[in-house]
Image 1 (spheres, protein in one colour):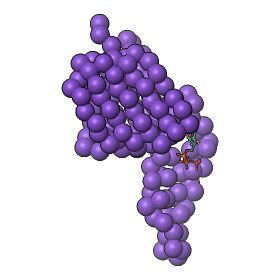
Image 2 (tube, protein in one colour):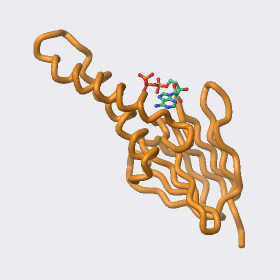
Image 3 (cartoon, helix red, strand yellow):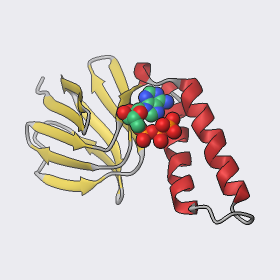
Image 4 (tube, helix red, strand yellow):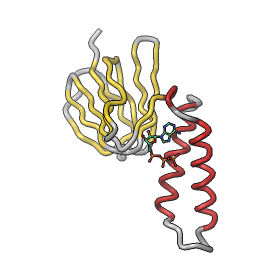
Amino acid sequence: MKTIKVSVVTPDGPVYESDVDMVSTKAQSGELGILPGHIPMVAPLQIGAVRLKNGGNTELLAVNGGFIEVRPDQVTILAQSAEQSEGIDIERAKSAKQRAEQRLADQKRDNIDAKRAELALQRAVNRISVAERRI
Ligand code: ATP
């Protein structure tokens, strides 16, 4: 069976590289499912999970935005941050979630950057779901 090469790269370096059967993730325009031989494309990603199917195995990564570039034999994901599910510190993500929720709740009193807090909340919720494999 044909496979497709996947590389996930962040400013800190490569996070993941492997040959897989299928890549699924959420672009800003909606769900993407990529099989070997997919037509070339580039799309911006949401803060979300990347699911990598390989035989009976499914690997999950938490990806913080960025872009996906698809070629028939290669998928490259460039993101500000990305973690494999087993590399996620769930307690850190829970603290980040609490901090962001507190900031959003304090919004009316303080002049807090709501968009920034909302994005921090999305990153934390995504990391928790990926770490707990609730995607
Ligand atoms: P925090 O407030 O906990 O730093 P954050 O969402 O602001 O969270 P980012 O700026 O997205 O963090 O990421 C900074 C670096 O820390 C990246 O290398 C990212 O992979 C890593 N990182 C962030 N949160 C976690 C986590 N819960 N587990 C593992 N690595 C994490």
